[in-house]
Length: 515
Ligand code: BG6
Image (spheres, rainbow, N blue to C red):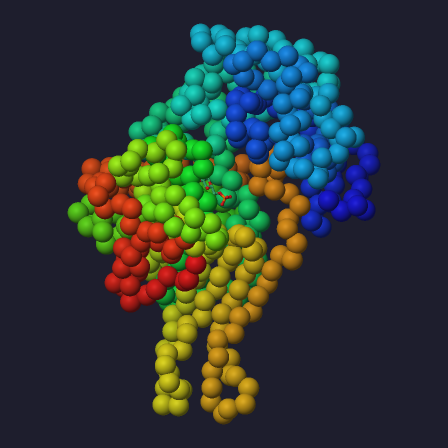
């Protein structure tokens, strides 16, 4: 937040300057958080909301209702939120913001049996709206386990809370949206029985990362790259999301999901879509989402009998990460000792359209790898004629454009230049653009603001979810039917992943960028 920031006086939308951009202050609202005592609410949601308050990005009139199953008095609830916010933000905690923020926090116990169990919640919302002077804008954030989404959504519908009353009524859910095509369709159907598509916010926090948003700006606000952004000039694209962390305390969820559901169906496919999509007619939510869905529709279905040609899976064994010894996946608390769940995946994807025909996109993601890194690298074709061939030894590195998502937020262009001194000598150089400072708004803050402002650009539409599942479900079925626990573990923690992933790309005469 810039100190010089000023609110625009007068009526109409009000703005505050953040990261040199004017951010519109949302209209008054009520946020209802289901699962408020859970991990997601404590680690991400409540601290992000507090940060928005501290940055002056919330309106004068708002309040938050936490919904849980337990009996919790107002003081106990406020104390729990304070612990969560202080725990997550430490030195960003200040008493003035807290004192204002805490008076807007309420807790409602909701019994989740019976279809009309949310009626008391509805009454409470109505009362508090009067007290806080909000105008009927309501956000229902489902920070509950995914198997509770359908029940909560239906009960909101049954209580009449999905119907806008003098404002908007938005529902937010996080991934996983289903675990295959069938369950995703069912969930979408249940959501659509009570909410219209423009009320449903399916979030993917990768879309809120600064450099991910920059992909479209970079591609479509510059004229020099887009003419090269196709099969004539691009040899292949690599998309990497590597993590050093293991599965933490999420054994129950992760062992039933694995890396393809956890990372590919959502984050990696979203990065793929932004890299490969056609220019939208306008930078507006529906136009951008239309183009992303078109990419998913053009992805060549995975050939069932030859999965090894397009997918390589892995599971981490023990090893050393950042100088610390770490346990194998199967020795993590709560993981069965013969688990065949993959913690690493590499995938070759073709997009069968005019622009990308024949250009492979190599995707990889895994846990407990050598480094934490998310990046998209676009590898251009080599120069067509090597006029230096007789004077230079070795090959000339083709140009690469690297969009770095995290931890560094940067764009680098790798090119060849003459080195100084000797007459004919080439060296590989890099031109770097870097966001020098960390963005002020975190992923969740951005997502919350967009939801309050009714902007669905960073949220995934029903058809996008179903299209990506329709590609991945048959592949997952096939992989799971042939899963053999004795193939795992097949990579050491702290390494670059399994040899099978290297083979996948080496077979095509290419190599992964080092992690
Ligand atoms: C989540 C996955 O969606 O994304 C996690 O469930 C993963 O398994 C996380 O660790 C990675 O997100 P980030 O923002 O830390 O790269």
